[in-house]
Length: 94
Image 1 (cartoon, rainbow, N blue to C red):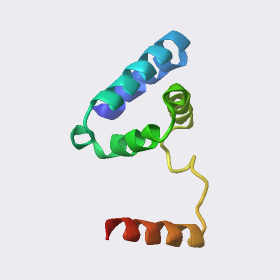
Image 2: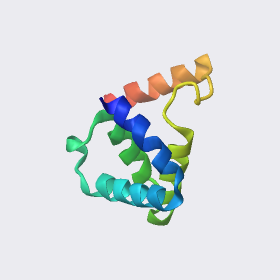
Image 3: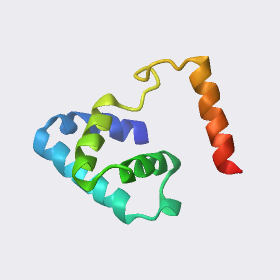
Image 4: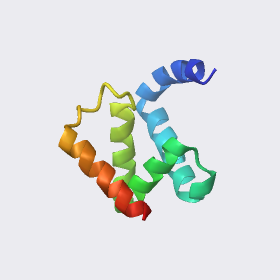
């Protein structure tokens, strides 16, 4: 059902006023909602956006929306980069 609704809503996000309204609404939702009440994928987005200054968050969110969340869009990671990320996550947990 969620994929179907996304399929229906995607053409509306090509209209600039609708896209800006949606992004502003999403940004206020991410800023106002506690991390514990967000879905897992939105927690990562919230953490990344909190690192940016407030005036850059909307532009970053729009860039992320344009790129999409498909794994094909992300460049392949090298083995060394994956190992470094795993090592860093192990450090942060302990």
